[in-house]
Length: 56
Image 1: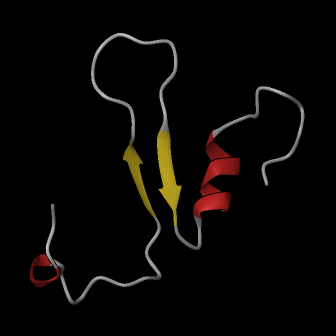
Image 2 (image 1 turned 180 degrees about the vertical axis):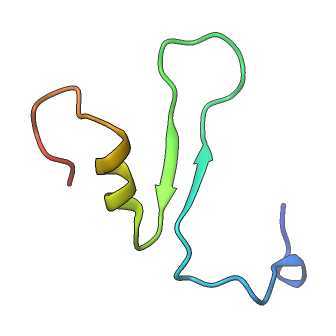
């Protein structure tokens, strides 16, 4: 757990970040969490939806 005193004060809420959200090991689905102001832009450039709907 990260306490408030260990958070980098120079980090910004304007950052776009990504992280692997599934545990290591064999599996059929992998989840990547993306958040921040450029998340949707990055998502649409890297991935195609399984169904032909747009990302929301």
